[in-house]
Length: 174
Image 1 (tube, rainbow, N blue to C red):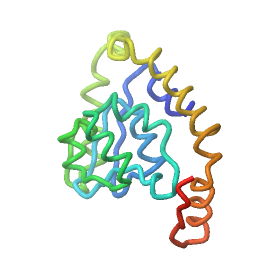
Image 2 (cartoon, rainbow, N blue to C red; image 1 turned 45 degrees about the vertical axis):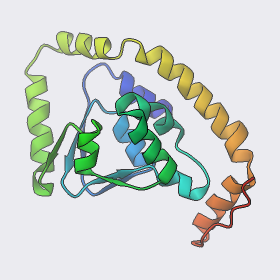
Image 3 (cartoon, rainbow, N blue to C red; image 1 turned 90 degrees about the vertical axis):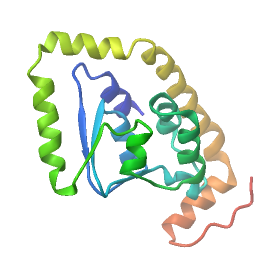
Image 4 (cartoon, one colour; image 1 turned 180 degrees about the horizontal axis):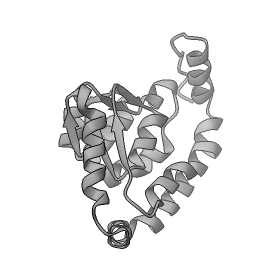
């Protein structure tokens, strides 16, 4: 969570270029960026629920980045969404042909970099007004809940063990 918070707090804009599957921790890292350029074939998701756990950073960031219903569906179902759906939800800034991802991301970076670094730093700080304090508190709460509550459940241990053993988990719902 500290890495993702550091990305959100980095003083200048960060552009992420995503191709293919962007799931779990990779999607959480992408959520740390200011803008995401995705290839048409990209998919985004938080499949942790399938393992009997959840994604603490995404649980905090997704409701800040997209409508609450979209965030809930991503976190509760574990299903991936397409780049087009992520764009409609506001998670992705633009969708481009897969073979144009790098060029499109670099072009966007160029359009940003042509401006005053002082103005960009200020704009980013202004965009984050209110987010930092609420995010820091929410990250702390989510991390405590993950470690002290969720990871103490039988289902969390079973889900992660089943994943490592490449088998379907047998939930006890405890």
